[in-house]
Image (cartoon, rainbow, N blue to C red; front, side, top):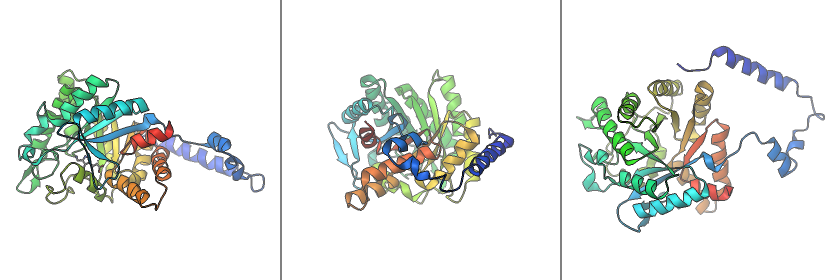
Length: 349
Ligand code: PBG
């Protein structure tokens, strides 16, 4: 375990208690003094949200010059490769450091052996090459999991109704290698199989891809908030059953710390908590316990709730977006995967 020593945490807790005990009573203490003007509020702000904190997930589809709206995610489109390149250039101009690719794979390419996952010329790998050629400074992240290529919609192989672990890990390694060969900067295993981080790290080292960053979806919960994403990648119709034998139970918190410790020990450079807002306690605990780069994924359902309410005029969309993203910084995250990335970047500019 790489948790901080208990005595350092105890000292920090004592310091905090001491700090509260020196506060004078009212009227010497008037906290509103620090909230009086925008300047004072800026000086007193404990956290800040920067464009450099944002990773933008995008949906890629076949074709040319196509931009197809995702019905359950107002403002989000599936883009053909040429449009993804244009989007990456725009994102780079806004200062967004990274883009994360999710392929929308046609039904014909979803098979039991999931072979399209490690096809060097699959949609995701083609998009990676095109982006790296046109916008080299844009970091490209890809998803390691079989669900876009599987006829069952599951992240792993299914045998007799069971998601098999070790065979899936072998396939995930092939998939990650194809992504690394295509030039990705960051691979993000989101599959939740056991042992995949170590296997992928070893394969990356052996194949000369020692600088590829491994961002583990370490604490990924079996969540209802992925619904719109499954529409976006065309997996909702395909998915048989649910993902509870590999994704985590929302009731658990200690287990998330064990998953993070394990993935770091296996060679992850950074970890992710997913979904985001319903799991801010996990973000904070992860950051306090391990002190490693920690990311949250504000997932499709979280985006849809804010975007739909804003569309109806029920909330102020810009403010809700900013507030929700600041929450991640307050909870200790170093960055956020969010479909709001370009909108937030424009607001910050
Ligand atoms: C699948 C994957 C999912 C998401 C990212 N990768 C869905 C799932 O686990 O079913 C969800 C992202 C989102 O909802 O925005 N490997």
